[in-house]
View 1: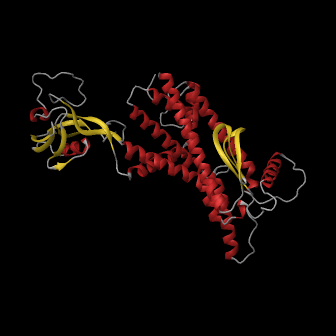
View 2 (view 1 turned 135 degrees about the horizontal axis):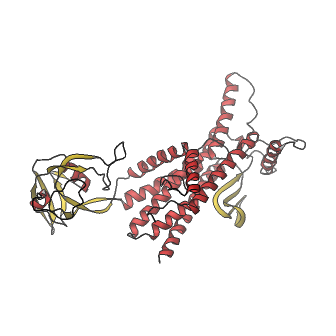
View 3 (view 1 turned 45 degrees about the vertical axis):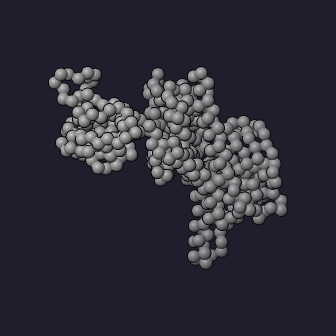
Length: 438
């Protein structure tokens, strides 16, 4: 059964990845067709063709390796002029790129080429793919936090401590001289549902905790719902040294990475954990926070890849927040699906992984280097700057930017990306990140 669940998690992530790639390419395809560009192919995957069908002038299909996708737009670059045999490796690469580009320009459709579009339309076409991933991430995170909810303490009481113990104590039983907790003295019982604390209505345990922690030594009216009826109790929090926790019950860490401990009001009751639905603004906010986190990772990607390579050679522990290959994401999805936890908890983590994957696709494709979408945006903007400069000084419009000249640099970038991908793939096979140890 565990094996089937593990495989199910991998399949879920593969389907999600395929959908993410497909929608990314749709983000390029729709504006390209809207602006009249001839699109010859829309393909998911690379390598040998598995299936395809031509609809109109566009061939739609799937290829063997589901590691990406592409659309083939007519005339990404200006048509080349006749030239003799190229000498040298880089010149040969440039000429091959120009020849391949020329083949996309169909006879009679010379005016339906990408490079002739106004700059703003070219930017929209190239940003359409990454933006589609960002939109998908926002939708996923909104479903996650507003539809399913965030797991945190609810207003239902799960436990009441009998006595006040020092913070960090490992004692499991109360001594005779240990003072009783205010919750026990007030008569709070497991199963009670908090309605209000100190006259303030509460909808989460975190809200109740904040009121209690801010009122050491003050008597508070505490209204609970018990057996369908509301009951008012009086409770006086004692001042105690306690570890500060967030809404999900996790310790808040200080600048030194250690849990924050403060003297606060304490009553000695614990909450049942449950999924608490958040406002619709929480989904976009979560996506934005993830964009910032992934962006920071991209800025330090070479260092992180180096660390992954070192851990691969030495067998050291991987950073759980570090970069992963598709294999690594699949393995994590399998671990999550096979773990011993409620189905909704597992599904929530899988959705979170898929949302983060789409954010990674969004941020990574914005890197301003060819062959990535951000590189094509830079080329279009540079073309626009040259044209604006010429117009400002009343000069003839310059020839369109011929990005095939950048093919040698593109090859170098692509080679580095492949090398980094290979390091991550090997590390995810031989020294994978493990969520649950072992």
